[in-house]
Image (cartoon, helix red, strand yellow):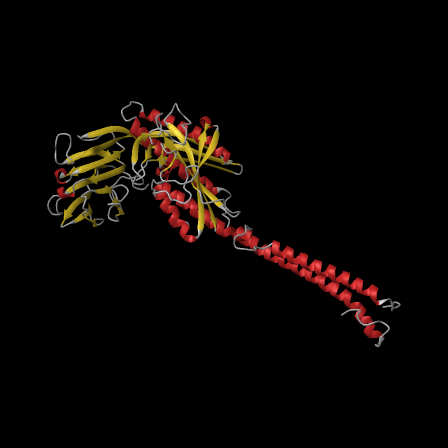
Amino acid sequence: MAGLSPPDGPGTDSECRSEEDRAQVILVAAFSLAVAFVALSVVINGAIFTQNLATRGDTAGGGDALQQRQQAEQMVGDMLEHTNANYSGTTDITGEFRSAVSDLSNASGFQQSVAGRAVDYTHLSASNGTRVYQDSPDNFTNASAGDNWTVAENVDNTRQFDITITDTVELEPPGNKPFAVNLTDTSSSDTWLLAIAEESGTLNLTATYTDAPDSFSATCTAPEPPSQEVGINITAGLFAGQPCEALRFARNVSGGTDELGTYDIRFNNTENIEGTYQLTVDTTSVGDAPNDEPAVYSATVEYTYRTANLVYETDIRVAPGEPDD
Amino acid sequence: MQRLPPRSAGDRGQAHALEAVIGSLLLLTSVLFALQSTAVTPLSASTSSQHIENQQQERAQGLLAAASENGTLEPAVLYYNASGDRFHGADGDRGEYTGSRPNVTLGQMLNRTFTSGGIAYNVDLNYQTNNGRATNVQRFVYNGEPSDNAVSASWTIALDDSDHLYTPQGNPTGARIGDSSTDFYIPDVSPDTDLYNIVRVEVVVWRV
């Protein structure tokens, strides 16, 4: 250790000098170690910060604006359904919906401003349609007990088409005139046919399209439930609660949001099914249905999202329960 | 170097000891500084675990989006026992779920997404009061105070006067929330219109 041997003890001059200089060496070593540690922490911090930057999104708040848009679409869709349910008998159903959107915009403004953003919805337009339904279990015959009948004509779009079968015993085997939903293109007469049948304890859902070379036929099956009740959500593509690949509503038939043209909807062999159904079409020309009522089919609202560094504005089309929804 | 005249041994020992103490202090502070600037434990909040927090937040946001899409978010908000002033089967002091779990699809989704991965979550429902001029919070699920590295995700839903409360089995009751006879924890902020309230469902998640 430094300075332990007495300076006047045995030893040469050079030994004494090196022992006195060693304290300085220790000090210098301590300094350089400290610098090395600081440098190391800077390097590590740099790496951490790089990782931090790499995990951030590219646009500041862009994702937020889109999420808000999705929420807006669902809230306005909710409003649309509530308006249809509560004001189907009134003459100015569109006016009711317009004020509902304005209420929604005002009410959500405060909550959004707390989060540091301004979100606004403005009603631009709404298109009228008709809801056709049967809400007590029965055969799907029309108002005058007709077996094969036209539900709606010149339809561009259909949404929320649900069928609930309350007694699967009524269903017929595939070869024996099962109940079918028939979509016929008004210009080309191509048909998309959805047949609902039952054979030896198995429910069959067969979608058929006839127009070479695009013809196809696909089937989904489900076991017949002991309760003999089964739900088919046609526009959502659900059969007994399960996704059904064959069930792509109005596939290849003109119509739908991204295709042009129209189709007629017919029910065939309605005595071979028992249950309830509902569908909303974007036309007011409906057939001799047991129940139908005017409804807002779809609406367009202008959505504005503003924060300190982002402004996003777009028109949202709302039609809850459409096939591509 | 000029040789200094010899001094007494006692003086030089003190000087060297002082140097050693200063040196060790320097060493210690630099080590301390280096440790402070990096993540010390997996639980301490720091920028080094940012990507994990981002992932958790995306998971929570995705869960809310899915719940909203399949229509299970609103039934959770309306899963309320009006006469008991609490959610159905809730065991917390403020009507929220602490140990028990809500028997709604949202509760199952939360459990499957987070509990199995060792992630704790709280669910808060922010709603408007005083005709839309203030907000209040009702806890839905409370698992404790979130840690420093907690993240949150939220989803906004609109309630209509004609929405119904739900039974413990998850079926709509006859009680419309817009009726004055229905006792509901969320007030009607827009009594003149069909709009009832705007509820922000907030999920707070953190690692445990």
